[in-house]
Length: 422
Image (cartoon, rainbow, N blue to C red; front, top):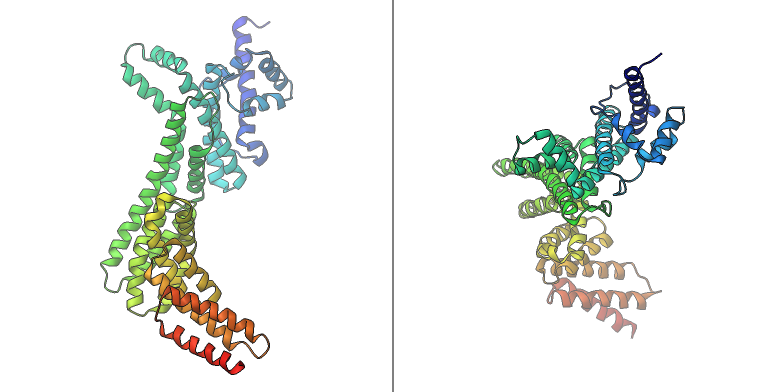
């Protein structure tokens, strides 16, 4: 017959087995059959002890220990809220944080998209639980003071609490920093997770102060990593500039910047880095009449320039950069292969900056080119409509850039056509 100590030990072992099964389910190893060793937090089975303090939790644990884990898993996966006791939130924060670390290891090993999605779910749950605990504060403070037993000052206790509560966020930030130069899959998922934490609402009970700190820390960690990548690109670009005829190397750096822009989901500062340097490189190529290289530069930066144009159109704070973006659109309009697309680029450049001299003259010339194509492609049938369309293009071209010889010559041609008809 078992004594009290033996029964307690047996119950603890049963709880540990139950929690390990729940941990495997949280990580997703039941689906993948992954053999990795688990890193359950110390005394993690205390989570089940706390859950038993409610009738719902006690029933869920009991069902799990008789072969039906569904209710327990549902409770573990439920969104964090203030209805849960601070002690339970603490256990859940540690549980989900440890599960996130294990799932991250599995995702890195397999590259499986669903594994990365599971990491994000677990990290978000852990951060939400920590945010609720920080908002309540008393539980964590009492716990830290009890552990310190007077050995730490009040400020040291606060620092220790922050280090614990923001540990998950900083681990995500470190994953991003570690992989940003190589733009690894894991780093990209970390970037997306930090971006979600900047924009995704936390539980309603999280205080405004704590919510602002979560948002601010997420933004800081994201910016730290992208700035590190930009610093590397800046150094490479400076080396290219110092090289005689280094425009090819400059273009390679700018192509990498365009890839970083896409990888970072359109980071504005990456766009500005590329635009400021691409304009200089573009003019160097233009003056050297290296048209193919200039066209290639425009194409390599197409997505970046289009994204920057949208930002300028929608964000008043980006207006100071309108001329910069417009010039890159003008380069594209000049070097493009398809007239319709070139005109669209010119029109957009003019919308961004209606006083941009290069945009006005290039668009005027393109409209004249379209008028020429309209007249050249028209026979007797439909001539009136073609003449009207060409005249409209030329009228606008003359308004954009008065005195353009090509426009004047085409207007004379139209006058001759209409005179012959009369």
